[in-house]
Image (spheres, rainbow, N blue to C red):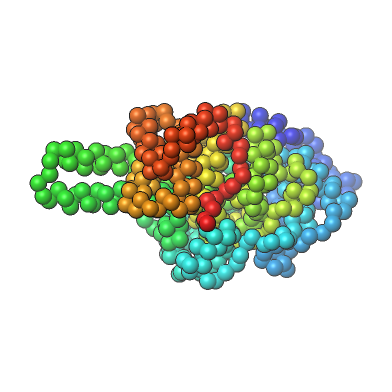
Length: 530
């Protein structure tokens, strides 16, 4: 079945509850154990029917689960024998070309796809001439800043103490079951095998994964964010490095400082105008907290065999990802212009990475993230993920000032994909532009006003122009600011950048013609410092 046909089927079944089976086997032959002679088919089918009756499982489920277990054992043996970073480069063989052909012509995550993927991936994914993934135990702020911001490297480390990351004590599938087993929150669950997005409660799907009772589905929970959960949220401390680079957290801190200062000033006699300003600021912050979603505290749980297709995280955001239990295999490619242009093409045409030539697929490095390790991925990295064993992960996404142009451009691409129905709204960074206007108002412009000379530095001016170009096309009234408020903020930005009349006219011309031009220009991914 093609991906397009699968997507059509998935849409029809999109609202089904988690659990059960949609399998409709067309022939008993496909349920024979691998390598079993056809003449013994009747014997195997008879045994399977007896077992199926006892366990209330389908023939498909029994033999498929047997094959799954076998493949996972092989996979784990292979990984144990390998170095923990990159797979080996090998020239394509006739067998490999056949396997690659299967990946190109079957739906990602299906049984046929996964059987071929497991056999092919160690030989297909190979070394990069300039490694961009660094394993280090020196997780100091200085080291992380250099690797992440200056060099754009992916970081893998197990030095949690220096990271400042904390989670519930003795957190595991066993202890998490006490927290999550009865959670009634409704969430989306991706079934890797069928490609469908199903609906379930946190408790139902977590228990089914924990007990291995997911039927013929392979659930992959990627959308359970707990920042605003009064029980779970406080038990997770975001890594210090993430806090210091998160643009959203920067806005929170700016609001808190402003409110604290105005509250302190209220001890003295204030004019009615000042009291109104304080009230307005508090109302703005309360509204901001109410409407702006959080993406920095996810609890991710996946069944063995889960596969996540090629993607760049929402708004091109950075990722931190700690494997509490289990193991993840991540395949990464740098956010070069060539790779980002490729990604844009794939997204707009709704194709996957396996439709590309082999030399393109070989751009990806394969890395194993083991239990007790954290991976920090800078913005814009292309990646897909395989879960060889049942896994529990804590992670999050965050946008950064350093990669502001990339965040703007990726959001524009997402909007274009949304318009042609290649993407759903819940796969985007919701209220992204409202957040950017809040950052412009409470962080960037005050920064300019406090230190006017800073506008002369290339880095800061580039940041300002990235904001200006990205926000000019989003001046309509939003959930946080009115159209007139946005226009005033952009005029202040132009003045802060000391734009001449000609530059303002040029900016207006760019904006007028950039619905396509700016959105497809991936010529740079982060701000350049002179």
